[in-house]
Image 1: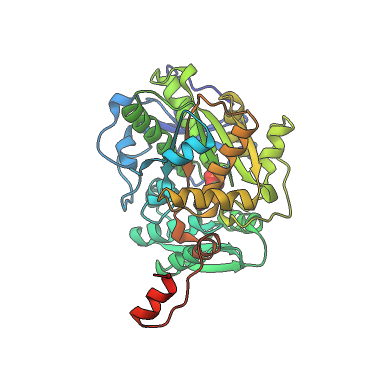
Image 2 (image 1 turned 90 degrees about the vertical axis):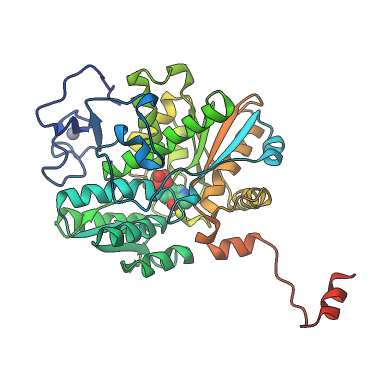
Length: 417
Ligand SMILES: *Cc1c(COP(=O)(O)O)cnc(C)c1O
Ligand SMILES: [Zn+2]
């Protein structure tokens, strides 16, 4: 991946010190003159670049827009988002057996997932471009976030969902916030293929994580983790473990670290090891890391109860794989049973997450057992979505209700008192 050079002059195409660069051929483009999601020349992924890279001293205020100096605008379409808790989980920490374990609960964003961080920036860009229809393919949370932020901005939204494979809470959100919901006969990757076609035909503005501006918003997860951890622990985490679907977050965190390194705000030795976790039934990134490849192979058939990461063709792999390698991280696959166990363990500490989120903790446990993660590590696990997103999965993982008659005596008898 291309180095960031903080001393280079911005290219002529830059607007207010912001431009786009192709990660493959290094071609540069103006950021807002034309709608483009990939490189005109080679179809490579685009990355947002800045003439001025921020240090921690530049940040003020709260939430995603605290980090405006690291973003293409000073403000966005906001609900507001970010500022999520970094939970202590003492029992889980000693059970897994690491020096320190904190849970960055991104389920505490306005629509219940980290996707809000990307949308506050992405929808702001959409308003800048003057588009009138927004669209995404989604395993659920992107559609919920897009529907809410699109509604907030007064724009029409269209979401393509894999039929029967989206958790109930997410469909309900997209529906109530007024998105037009197309249930596609196919998996997420099919939905993304179609919505990319619609976007290139000019039918809609694409707000999947292929859109480089969304990743800018998601970058703030990394900035927030580093600041919170530093302020509360007096040091930085050795490792960040996160669930991987389209690998947008992995790419965004890596970009966060590269920019901080280039500005001198982060010592290269202090960069946390990016560690991705996938479900066994949808693990193309894990396969690529294990085989030392720089590209993923598309899995046409994927399955996992963790529907948010039921993805066989992670579009951001070319940005994310170099991040895993460069930070000394790794990737690991976990079973649905391991995910459910981790979901319960988090719930026992009062932290309610959806299945995909629990994959991070399940993956940490596996890597600790294998000795890949050592006992003296300080780790942050990212939990990406809220428990209520998937009420069916929560009920399956949790305790059954006990029917009782409607009298106190009968309830006391039932309790065995
Ligand atoms: C979108 C999502 C993911 C996957 O994130 P990527 O950036 O696509 O890798 C994981 N968990 C939840 C809950 C999500 O909504
Ligand atoms: Zn290119």
